[in-house]
Each structure stands twice: as C-alpha cells, then as structure tokens.
Length: 456
Image 1 (cartoon, rainbow, N blue to C red):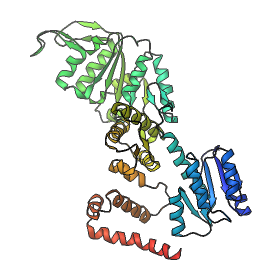
Image 2 (image 1 turned 180 degrees about the vertical axis):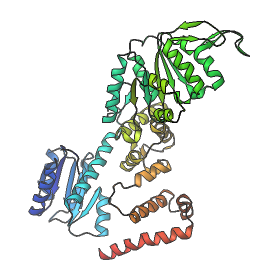
Image 3 (image 1 turned 135 degrees about the vertical axis):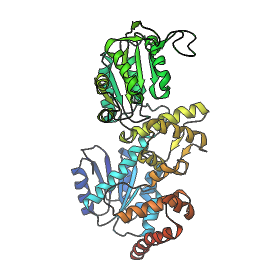
C-alpha cells in the first residue's frame, strides 16, 4: 500500500460496472488517479490520449479479451505496466497473461490489501525500470560528487554543505566502499582551503613503525635508513586538509602523538627536538564504531572527542533505495564508453536483482560488478543470467513478511536450483544439505503445486 498519496495514473478495464466502481473507489482512496473503461476499445482510446503508469484489465470480456489489450499495451506503450485480474483463474490463464506481458495476475475474489499490494509491486517495477534506463541524454543527479537522489543522501549533502563553511574537525563514518573519502574531498574543495593541498592518508595501510615518520617527518640519521631529512604529510599539507582514513587502525601510542598535534597545532619530526607550527584541518574517517572502541579502551576517549566535533554518517548502499539504479546507470554508461560500446540496458528482473541485493561492498562493489557486466555481456541487454550468483538470488527473491517459513524455504530452494540450471548436486552443496534431503524437500515443494493445479 502506498505510504503517502501519489499521482500515478491507473486505467481499470472491466465489463462489470460494479467491479469498476469498487476498484476506482479503493485506488482513489490511497491517492492514485484512476480512469475506467468498460471494454478494450474504450481503453485503447484512453491510452491514446492519456499518459498512464498502469493498466489493470479483466481477462474475459466481450468482443476483445484482456490478453489482446495486454499485447497492445506492450507493443505500443513501453512505459506503461499491465496487471491482469480474472474471475476464472487457471494455470493456463496465468501463463498466457505473463507471456503476453502482464506483470501481475490476480484472481477474483481478492481483498483490498491484495489488490493494493499487487499494484504497488507493479509500480515499483516500473519505477525501477525508469530509474535504470541508460539513455545517454538522461541526466544523472550529482550532488557534491555523489550520484544519488535518496532522502538519506540528501541529509549527507546538507551536512557536507555545512561542514564546508567551518574549520572544525569532522569525523566521517560508514561502511567500506560508501564514499567516505569522496565526502572528505567535497568538504575540502568546497572550503576556503580548496587551493591548498588535500592529503589523504590510509592509517591502516602504513606499517606502525613507519607511521609517525610518514605523518610528521624525520631528520637525517633519526633511524637506520634515514639518509636524509624528509617532511611528513602534516608539513606537506600545511594550509590545507589532512584526511586520516581508517583512523581507528592507529595504535594507542600513535593516538597519543596525534592528539598532541591536534591540541598544539605543531609537529615534531622524528629525531628532532624542535617543533614546527602547522596549519591543517583534520578530517577523519572510520568504518568501525569508535564509541564502542572507546568503551573497550581500544581508542582514546580524549582523541575521540577531538575528532568527533562534526559527525557525518554515509549510509550503506542497501539503504539508499533507487540510488542503486542511478549508480548502475552511471557506471554502465561510463564503462561502455571506455570499452567503445553503446550503453547497455538492464532487463526489469536484472534491475530487481541489483535493487534487492545487500551490497556488502557498497558503491565500490557495485562499480566492480557493472564493469564486469559491460566487459562480459554479449549484446546490449543485461539480464538475470548475466548477474553474479548472489545478485541472481536477489532477482528471484520475493519480499514481504506475510509468508510461512515453509514458503520461504521452498522459494529459496527453487531460486538456488534456477541459479545452477537445475543441477541438484550443485544446489545441495550451496544449501549445505545432501541430495537425499534435497529430494525430500523438493517433494514437499511440488506437492502443494500439484494440488493447486488440480483445483484450477
């Protein structure tokens, strides 16, 4: 059910005046704009003069059937979805409806909740397809270097905008691959320090024995191998911004030295007794819970509060909704241009797979997946079989919390089998069970299907 009033336009086609009245009332009540037609001829006339998002049609009607209307919409209105309802449900009818292009097949009688849920599913697919279009002339929303238009990211953009106009220390948190360095660069290049250096430092990528020297510099002879004096990152970044990525990887001893620099605004090169004033702004980032590390005494509390003046959280990709599709469109266009190809398109189910996948590697993982798809996909359409295994499972997954555990298990087993082209040995390995157990579970899956088929 829509969470808020919407403006989607829906055409309901049915030869029953009562059905038209009920559907129009129920759909209008939740914010949809609803048109009605008593037959296919009238529906075609409305389609010719009105931009519609969804057509809901009855299957059996006088003169021209709903299947003919579905085919007409699919052939002539690529940006309109179709859903079929019928009082004569059968497996054959459902198969024909789907083959003709209907996204949903709903049997009468159905509840208001079933109707609204089916409508929302279809409109969600339409929205996903629109967001995932790869037309070169379609503008991708870019904000402060980020691609996205979700509510959670707009909060990030506002926070970055405010951080630009202050010299306060900023702590940027978020999972790996979310774009923490991108946020830091946006803050720096939008600030008054933009003409000075931006110095990114991966604290976890520098050996502990060398970190102090890399940060603060060293004098000649300070240690074995120090054949000449060398300025550190803080001196090199004087007047600009130092970005300490994965600051939580610093040892407690190194944290003490960093704290002193933040407090005194001066550095002392390794092997020297003289300090040097530096004017740098500190931006720090972490993919860990610093407050939790403080409680475990793995991170200094005083340094935490020094860094945590302004906090910006970059949400994981899985919480950014249709930003996933916007990013996919951007990357597929970018990598296709690099490869000398025309931009590839995504099928609806492929978009669903990208949208539903959890993306533990976030934007970085999505970028890598799209690059692989552009290189490996033959033709100009990316479909479910082209996706990595885990994304294929996502494409086949049906969401919601109204199903029994047995239904969820049956669907998952079917999805795994589909992903390995019916190879039961491979499916059993993925499921962590033996072939005998898999056969028994498949019998349970097939039994209800045969029962439903015999009743249709």
